[in-house]
Amino acid sequence: MNALETLSPALLERLPAAVQTPSYDRTVLAPGMAHLGVGAFHRCHQAEYTDDLLSIRFDRWGVVGINIRPPGLADTLGRQGGLYTRLIRDNSLIEARVIGSIVGVVDSQASAAPALHVLSSPDIDLVTLTVTEKGYCHIPSSGELDSRHPDIVHDLANPATPRSVPGLLARALELRRATHGRPLTLLSCDNIPTNGIILANVVRAFAERRGNGLAEWIEANAAFPSAMVDRIAPAVTQDDLDSVEQWFGYRDAAVAVGEPFRQWVIEHKFAGRVPRWDLVGASFVDDVTPFEHLKMRVLNGAQTTLATLGVLAGLEHTSDAIADPLLAAFVRRMLVEETLPTLPTVPGIEPLAYVEQSLGRLRNIAIRHRNHQIATDGSQKIVQRLLNPIRDRLSQGESIGLLSVPVAGWMAYLIQASARFGRRWPVSDPFAGKVAAIAEATGDDAQALAAGILAIDTIFDPGLAANDIFRRAVTSALGELLSDDPMAAVRHSLEQADASRLKRRAQSA
Image (cartoon, rainbow, N blue to C red; front, top):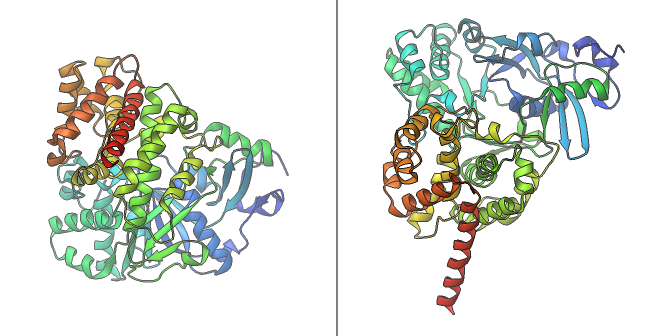
């Protein structure tokens, strides 16, 4: 085999024995589902589960991958016939596997037409999505459609040429109604609690504004199950691409890298045919909510905390942040002492064991998850990961001294990207400009900065933002995080937690 040959269907039989390949005949695999947002996570998660399913129960469940935002797929997955190498990395261990479940790819960045052609096809019974939080064009604090979003404004005026995900899906459903009337399941696989409800909200709200009975047809013919998805899959680097050639002797422009752990919990609510992912490790349940809350508040809460505080501490990766003794102690105590008490019972999962498992996963030094990548779109994430548990703690009359620090950490992370603070790093967040404007108007006064940011009611529920305990805790932590010793906020919060614990013990003695 030529060392520089590129992965393709013709190459499969000549790959090294160390690389696992599909056990089914891809030449007869027909499309049955589409996926919107073919990035590293999809290639490490839903596409792999589907590949597993095809290996044991072959059926018409080939995946057509669609991207309506960069990157394009034609020059990577397209040239490779939908094939790619999924690398599992666990510290020094490496496992390579070629995934074969993607049978076609569509670039629809320039025009919605190619995506609409696939999504409206009678062959497609199910659409999965990983479009990230901001792709839903929703208001994070309420989950409702953001009717002022520029893409939504455009799509309502130009419904046949949509730019947004809600507009695209509503148009696809409209075309299905007009052509063949087959039902469709739209399964969100994004990291948002009640993601199915949010997806249904934005699509139906868009359809209601369109009129002509579309919303009623969607209500009767489409299903929007919620799902909890879990696997750490960082952005692929050039080193990852080079490693496949070095280790296995072929080129792959669409490598995906993930950790060993994976989980998929799906609400059993489908409009038509159902892929039996439960046969290969997924779980179908009546209520995804307990699983969502556990994962969001523990694993994702830890990630957001370590990412923003890690950047402020000068650390590049999550594994670097959790290797820091102060940050490791802080995040564990935050989860155990303040987050876990807000969680419902989750069937089959012991909470403390889940915390330890989650922190252990973040210590995997082979998963080079950059803190800046995790911090991307933080404004869309902190409601579920931090603000909701804070709200629960306050309603219980309990302390929030630890949970308030990463909220202030998110603020400090965006503030220090503003011109007022020297643009210490570039950021990607829908509210980066808003926070920068607040920083430039108020200077380095922590109280004014916190007040200005807490007034962003699309992130901070006004009732929570007005809570004096919350405001004081966030303002105090923000002042320290913006100082020359940002980790003072972490140390002081732990000291205060210790003092409070000693006080409670003395009172109960």
